[in-house]
Amino acid sequence: MNSFPRQSRSSAILTTCLAFLLVSPMVTAQQASPPKLGPNVDIFSPSMPTAVMQKRIDEIYAAQQHSEFGNQRNAVLFMPGEYHLDIPVGFYTQVVGLGATPDAVHISGNVHADASLPNNNATCTFWRGVEGFSVTPTNGTMQWAVSQAVFFRRMHVRGNLVLHQKGGWASGGWISDSVIDGNVDAGSQQQWLSRNSNWKSWTGGGWNMVFVGIENPPTGQWPKPPYTSVEKTPVVREKPFLWVDSHDQWHVRVPSLRSQSVGISWKSGGTPGIDLPISKFYIAKPSDDAATLNAQLKAGKNLLLLPGIYTLSDPIRVARKNAVVLGLGFATLKPVDGRPAISTTDSEGITVAGVLVDAGETKSPVLMEVGQAGSKASHRRNPISLHDVFFRVGGAGLGKADVNLQVNSNDTIIDHTWIWRADHGLGVGWTQNESNNGLVVNGNRVKAYGLFVEHHQKYQVLWNGEDGQTYFYQSEIPYDSPTQDVFTPTTGVDGWASYKVAPNVTRHEAWGLGVYSVFRYPQVKLTNAIETPTAGKIGFHHMITLALGRYGEITHLINGQGAKVTPGPANTARMTDFPQP
Image (cartoon, rainbow, N blue to C red):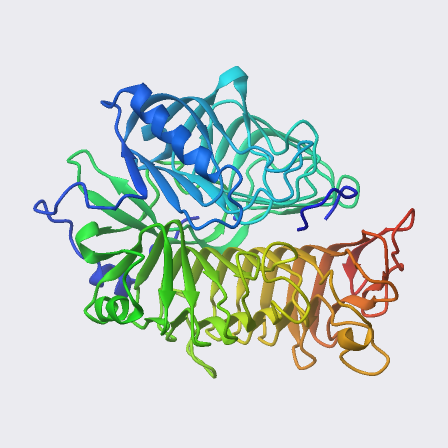
């Protein structure tokens, strides 16, 4: 997303496999509580004076309100109980309730995300999140005016929720495993993914609103209103979360895998899953190097990454079955010397959640690799999963990568990601923050929920595996291609398609896709927003293209079909299904 004003724009619970149950450790009464979580994690309890808590919240926000590319990272944790507070959520800030259910932590007052730019413009309100608590909002409505890399998980809003600020621009977000008692007003929000949630009603939305496994999806159907509803979520595991029991023992709950699910995981009480005591985690500090982190993983520990920036001369190597890497407060992994930041073996049940991967100045061939090249094992019963894993190339400084996220393992679940080559900030330019591809999928049966991929210089997404499924896709192609010559893959084709399914693939399906252009230079075009083979079982549903900014065009939506879009009155094209029935 860019930082300047523009036109409006851009489903039964299954038990976890027996093997996972057998390796789950028992909680021990001797574990220490609370753990030492460092200076960037604030732990509040109902016994603390409200004024003291409010002062600290205000201090964090003063530092983070406008710190789009700053180095500070914060997590604010609430022990179970009642609170009366005003909590603005700024950049790189995560607010967490530590109860077994969201209702165990109740905040009366304001919890809000506000537009970070003038004129109610929330198109750059990035990198923040809330999870695991309930809110009774002042005046009955909670404001959550956000765009990419913002998560809203395991929440209960005892009132209404609004996803914009006074009708200003806002450009994409995420709700999962949450209940809103009243209305959700998307209003001017341009695109949104909601998964396994429930509300009384839903209104509004601009271009591409996708609902998967929702108990009460909004009425209406694509293209007007721009709603895509998928009745059930085929396979998902919710994000692991910290919680504290009635004996003040700390745990990380790893939720069970769910199949064909509708609604929240905590409908009957706590989210089913396996509890890992905090003693089974190495609590990592930003000063730890890769050798330290890898030694802890090799010794059988999981990782809890405290808020901060981790400078890595070697990848974090996650090899053990069912290992968990959980970041707090947007823990940021920054590789140096052209290495990946994190890699996994092709081992079942690995979970990586809550991290931001920020490319280094020396180009990395890949920033995160899931499974080795050529991985062949089936993980249907216990897949690898990624939750709130975000990527950035440039913006906070010069960064370079060939591929941001490469998924080689079969059955991997991608549960919310923003893979962003920066269009503004430091180290930004066609020959500076170089990045060829956002996501490359080589594994089979990979599922992506909430896939935001933007501005990379070749294919934003290249899907080589069979039986892939995407539920919601949002993409802007690069703004800064200076000429058509540098944005041309082959003779007769202008530009690299945003979403590319490889020619050998015979089974692929996607729902709710939006591809947008904001070309900054004249005479630069994109022939196809989406390219796919057509032999076999291929299905794309509910697609939109928009041409924004001043220049260029997207000639076709998919495979030479769909109307041309150019800036101005003819700037939007839609298609319901491809191939057309």
